[in-house]
Length: 128
Image: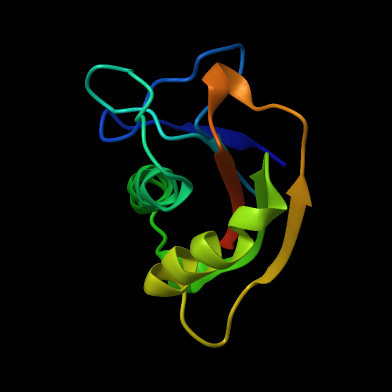
């Protein structure tokens, strides 16, 4: 099985030794996205909902570069530094994802890269 690196300038460049996404075996594996501005690379300050909107915008750009949309996502993971923000992030998440919703995990963590409040990754089925 071969793998293809997916990269777009419409989402932040990787801040470490990883790819924005990898396509392999008919699936697109999108790395976790934090609320970085795609042009400046600066972290968006503000509340968790605002950060989640930018995270999903970055995720959407990578999905598009890989030939997918949110409708193709089969699984996602949300990492929050405070589960008290769950409802706010859930509201933003539901602006992009519609039924049938992907399988999902939400996890509270002690810290995220660059001081982000939220990170989201995704696995999508590449349409044939």
